[in-house]
Image 1 (cartoon, rainbow, N blue to C red):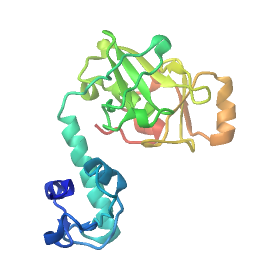
Image 2 (image 1 turned 180 degrees about the vertical axis):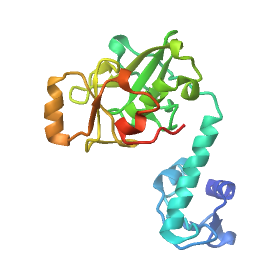
Image 3 (image 1 turned 30 degrees about the horizontal axis):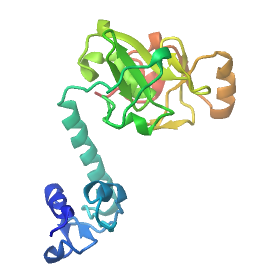
Length: 235
């Protein structure tokens, strides 16, 4: 019986080294290029009942082509996700604004799975109790500034933005914390925006991790986003 990798490979445009041996070969390639990429995750997703093979993905242009291919795939996935209505979390916030993230929840901004990033995950609660979970504080803040774009909700429908204090891990109202940008802390989306509840923790954080900007949520908007965070405000 032909393995399930065959159908998956055909769907994404991958050609096997020997098309006549699709059931047994453990290597496949794109029609052009030379770089090799091991891909355990994709194989486990699409052939959970088969031995793990090595996939040789060979996009055009060597390493530069590989990077361009990955970026193109991410853009296509983001575009597909953007065309769909954002899905709220399976569970609302727990008492005390504690996050209750399920394995099926996706970040409405980047489409990653927040449960994979428990230290950086955050949330926005809507007035009716519906909760959206995010992979990072940066994604959450973007949605808070532009709920019409990322949540398909009006600003007045928003209730509570929830982040996690960097030192304690406790859930905090994102409107009450000190936000830090430009430190050496790296989150799921790169350099992280860090929330600190206590002002006395700012100096300690600065000594350990550095910072370039310190701000409150009410001072943040789409116009000064890049100045305060060091990142362009894309949507």
